[in-house]
Every structure is written in C-alpha cells, then in structure tokens.
Image (spheres, rainbow, N blue to C red):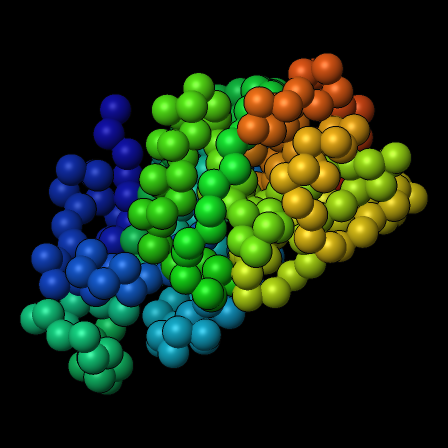
Length: 284
Ligand code: PDD
C-alpha cells in the first residue's frame, strides 16, 4: 500500500508527490529536517523537535512556512492516515524553488519554502535492541552541526565505511575527541558516570539527549558533559548512543575493542527503559 505524504499543503499518495528540479533542497542542500518517533500511535517529544526546527530555520534565515499548530496537525494526520503505531515522521523544509539555479538566496517574498512530511512504518521500534559496533572516522563535516540541515553526504559515507568494516555505525572524531555518531549522540559510562560531549556548534543538540540527561539526573545517575577520546571510550565500562530513531542503543565494540565483554551494559538498558516509559507518558 502506498503512503500518504504531505507536500506544501496537500496530502497525496507518495507516487503523486512532486518537487521542482529547482528546489534549493535538491540543488544546494538548503534545507532543514526533523525526525520524530511514534510509539503507540503517538508523537514522542513533538515540542522538542518543533522547537529545534524553529531554531534551525532562524539560524539559516529561512522563513517559517507553517505554524506550530498546523505542523502538529500534519504530523497527527499522517500518523493516522498511514496507520502508524510504531515508526517515524520525517519532516523537511527547504528554502523553496526560485525557478532557476542561483547561489544567492531568493527573495522570501517571492519564493516560499517547500514543506514535505512522510511517515516510516517501523514495527518493533520500541522492543528492538540491536547492540552496535562502531568504527571511528575523521569528522570533516561543516562547522554548524547544531543546525539540522539535510547535508548528510558525509554521514552517509561514514556509515558506508562502517559497513565496509563489518560494523554498524561510525563515531566521528575531531581534534582527537568524539563529536557524535553519524546520526546520533555518543556516550560512555565509567564507574557509573555517564559521559557525553557538551553542547556547542560541534554537535546536534539531540532531543533524545536532552530527555535522557534529564531522566538520568532524576534517577540520581551521575552525568558529566565533556568530550572524550576513542581510547577512553575503549576503556569505558559501557557505551551507547541516543537518537529519535533508536532511543538509547548500546554500543558493544569500538574500533575492534569489546566493551563489557561485547554485551550491552546495565546503564544503557536502564536508560532505555526509563526513556521509553517516561516519554510515552508525555506522548501526544
Ligand atoms: N538523526 N546527531 C546527529 C548528527 C543526528 O543526525 C541526530 C538525529 C542526532 C540525535 O538527535 P535526536 O535525538 O534529536 O534524534 C544527533 C536523525 C534521527 C536522523 O537523521 O535520522
């Protein structure tokens, strides 16, 4: 069955949805996105994703083409129309299609942003835990990783390098320190303390990260926000990553070094449990 997707105000079967060849998202990666998870047919942390979207648009001087209320309504309608119980809603906003290719931004009075949303059905999203092996790779992305842009070529290349090495994902390293994963925030645990890189323009300010750190503090778990090296990670008691599409996922191997005997650790397991329980309570 084909999906119903949303394009600029219309709900369409996916095969009928069309975007201009001049769309700046297509030509310049001039667009931002969000991925919101769905559990029990409800949106997890919609407010967090909506707030980060606003910030991404502002940082790029892009007009806000859709109100907060309308955005929520589109998310909910797509979840309902596509019968999503567990899955994801992908949202992308680009600077639009000015009708030609030009490096300069178009006049926002004349070119309106393109808004696209679609769902991804992922049965078992909450129950599937697939412990992950990571490789490390140089982080050569641009310097504004706090803006959630659709410039994802390098993370895709890093993912392919991980697969070629028989692993699942890559942790990106800059100036000797781990920034984040290809599409997730990275953590290690040492002597019960959860360590993750501090927020800056070097990493995406993960919505799952914010929730997990809040829940960890509420559960009296110790958290330290600082960067760490791959060598330190390999010596850690356990490691994990967070994202809207994987929640809290254990990392059991880093550049060939096994953590916790190659088995998921208890801190990641506990955090995943708390995260799922707590975020379902506030899902909308
Ligand atoms: N990725 N860091 C990067 C580079 C990411 O792309 C993501 C999310 C995260 C985690 O952010 P959040 O917890 O808000 O999902 C961190 C999404 C899921 C994706 O690209 O599919």
